[in-house]
Image (cartoon, rainbow, N blue to C red; front, top):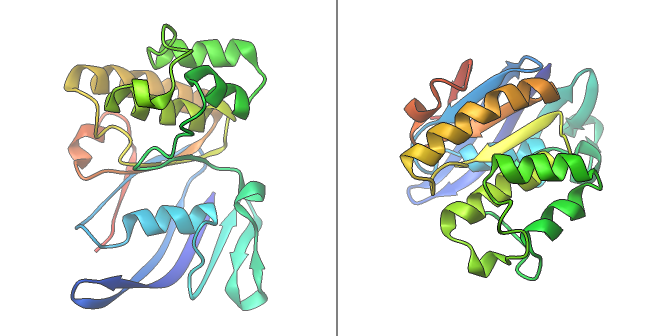
Length: 205
């Protein structure tokens, strides 16, 4: 169970907006997160990951306190260890597809399985500059999964994929998430595309 109660001031084009969320996510659940542009969806994921600190708040995961601003507790991202799919992919330009996954895990069988899932098994020696946008996005997803995380945070993870690839990948990810026992939060500007994947939703205004 993930319990989140946070407040974070955001600068928006109209001045200032306060991101205020109090919610809980059951272990093993898959939640889609949507709302208007600038509402703070990406910021919310980064707060959970430990990449951004809110002015006040508390985050507990399976009984362990990750963040408590009143008690000055704030675990580093390395201790939280989520799988994070960034909206801009955040790939390493000098690493090949294979090296991205090998950097995250030494489990060769798991790497090979992920490569086939993402249809990148024939592109293992390619660097990001030689991949299409959709291939880069799939690599970003595979890298997040490589560490077998118990928490997966995905920011617009399917935006660069065509409909066929998106449908196929989503169909493969659902049983994989269940196998990992992972809790998954997915930000999407098109929440309908996740109807067959998610079992809950959070709307951020």
